[in-house]
Image (cartoon, helix red, strand yellow):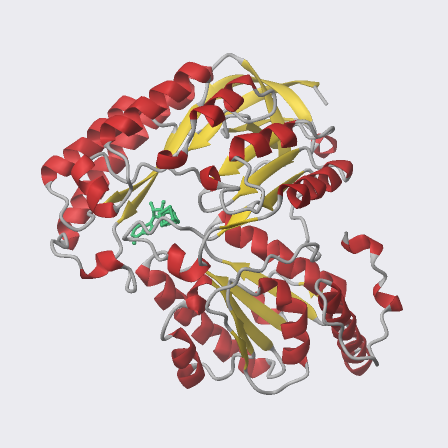
Length: 486
Ligand code: 5AD
Ligand code: SF4
């Protein structure tokens, strides 16, 4: 792992090695030299700001960016306007995400006038999209570095090139079959961590840009994943979140294929690890084997995020989801039989092209039947570059808005009822932080992903603690402390 490599022993007067990840450590050492020079010239270390948009995968990627910057000697600066190096890790799932990014970039370009040496970098999903590079070159020529999702492991090399150059450094790959292990990474929390198990997606749901910007499915080797989690557990991590666009098809493309359920069984055996979460699951790939493993596991959390997208079989077919409303309902019943106290959450898109009021009623129906703990609701966004953007039957914005509001009020009243059933019970929580609004309170997360605020002091952070749930406040609880479990 990274910590065993002594950056001071790397001779940067020699050329970079060809092999990864050694090559990237060489470039971290070079960036470190740049930082020392900066410090001598300016009497302070340079600082950096990593800004993340989008999903958990991006959040995890940003931890890798932060890890590299920290090792290179940059200090973290939360305010991007005050940073010497700013990187935006972008998302592009919805059409307006790009407009927002350009707006933000324009603002930063203006504050850059006060610090003309500020370097601005862009990476992530949006950079993989056609047309974006041209626009950046034309209208945002002050940007120093642009790279995409496939070569994030090369960040040290690209950072070094960008620090040494006045021109825009660009390295965006179409696709890759490479997975480079053991690049340094920061952890936002000492006691929990995301772990990538696969990248990309092969499903091509027709509204979704992800397969185009994240490429085809690729799984990390189980031995690499297990090694990473063992070392996290040895370092005090008690909860991991296994990340992938479609974790249920983990392992299918490996030389020695293994299933996601088998991987979970191996992870369960790791000493010191107490909780396992994962996301996202595609309903069509969720196997009986996985349900059985979840039912018998001591460590897999009582929470499953299972995006349904629509309750109408007709719309699901148009979306290329490859399951029907009935199959989805059967699946949730099967899961509830195996894991009775499981919390189910989902994603729903309202106003997909061709959606009629009857289709929408089917969505309301599935929401009432499944009784989700939380629903993430999205208005359909006509994402250019996806087949759905040119489909017939685009729904008028006011109709989409009206359905969205009706769905939201339905899911909110159901969630409030579902979430409150635990009132009075004693639950194990992982204590995550001091409460933002009231420092006499701590915030912990239950196995089913709900938050609880309760009195306690910061020494409990990172511990598993039993808490009595006194009062449900819609989507969270107020509780009173009990005792440390581990
Ligand atoms: N419009 C609206 N929502 C979308 N999602 C993905 N693509 C679109 C789109 N074009 C939603 C899906 C997915 C979540 C991450 O984002 O519900 O599960
Ligand atoms: Fe997009 Fe569908 Fe893949 Fe999810 S499963 S990332 S919605 S294509």
